[in-house]
Length: 606
Image 1 (spheres, rainbow, N blue to C red):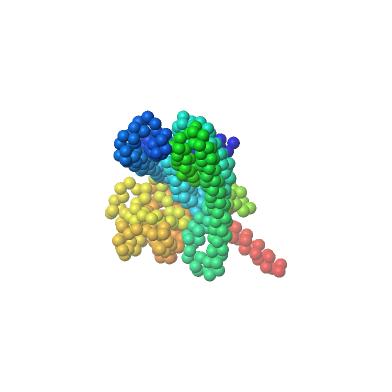
Image 2 (tube, rainbow, N blue to C red):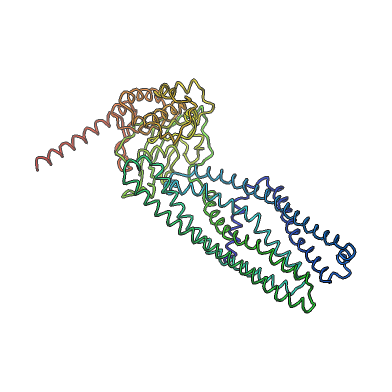
């Protein structure tokens, strides 16, 4: 059962990586030929030693070797020694060549696979990222692929070559002396059975270890990303170290178990080889004394038995690595094979005809599992008909579902129930990548990428014009700040922009939105963290730029609400109010008045 599992694991791994091996057929064939050549040279190499021993013990007789050593004297023995050296050199050269070729193939295939894997992870829906810690995903993308690469290279270089070497060696030994061949065969079979038995335990321990390592990476990533808070609150440092230390200790225990299993397997293989050699010496020595076997034949058998020791030991090491490899491949295949879960239609709205009318009909969105408390739904029964070019102020208390509504329109989350249409076309049928290119977005928590300021501002804009970029920066009141940077617009952004103030990051995000100048604007409290004069100035800029553009603007500012076409108020994921700004002002006044009356009555009673 275990062997079958291992075989299926290797088969699944091969199927997973096959699409990324395009163009590697010729190097693989050449590497296989060199591997076979190495096996052949490995098998032939002990024969000059056998011939020398046979010549010394008088068993060469009238053979070519006998005549060579008898007629040529010392020259014959030198020739046999030279043959052994040439065979050894050829074996070393073939191994060198196959190492370069097969390692190169494994490295290239895995690096292609890692690129696609990272692309798939980035394309996963927010529900996927909400369910997985960044550190865990980092472990999969970086460390799992590295282990997969080492495992694949080990299979290419060692496992198959060992199997072929063992089979060819047995054929030769059966031809020379079937009795001793049975001894070597028995030792080899016992060794493979031991590898098969231990592999399952290693695979199970490895799966547990990978989960523990993911927990360590997650803890480290969380604390490093919030290092300022950790250092600010003194006890947080000890708490962070305590959490990391606990998970690290669990990971160490798991690693030690895997190492113990692998080391135990290697020791057992060494013992099996030693027993095989001892039995070969005993049986072969007796055969030599009875004359049924020459001393040279015994030397040949012992050479083969000892020569199989290192391949078997290497195969034992690879057994542990294969268990890790198939475990990593299983986890990674699920990421690659799964659908992104996002809307991934192929219909693209014509750029010149893209109006941006939004329609939500009884839309429900599940809250992320890890974020759920008493509320299952992030949005529930949300209905909104927004004509093209209209602007909506989205308001509500913290956790009301405002940011989720913007993510929904962006296609970052999918409706659990209901329908969302843009220009009358279901968002599920649209090419969201193309659609997002027509949206200007300012999110609540602005994160800058590890690119230059110029590249950050120009994200999603094909060949951004320098003059347009500078104009957008000027309109966002960030141009003077950029000019003071060491290299201006070409200054690299470090630590996701954490070295900039929140206001500076927010103004850079606004400049990016202004430069894209989309047909749809999604603004998630874009003026948060700005001083009052700058906030007022940028509010006027955004109001001017969004005029005639479909806009969802999350805000609590009554002045901005009053200049919108519509107001949508959310409470607990549901629509609490939907109407004109005037109607919203009356609705708010009524609620405020009712609350004041209730408070007054409560005060009088007490």
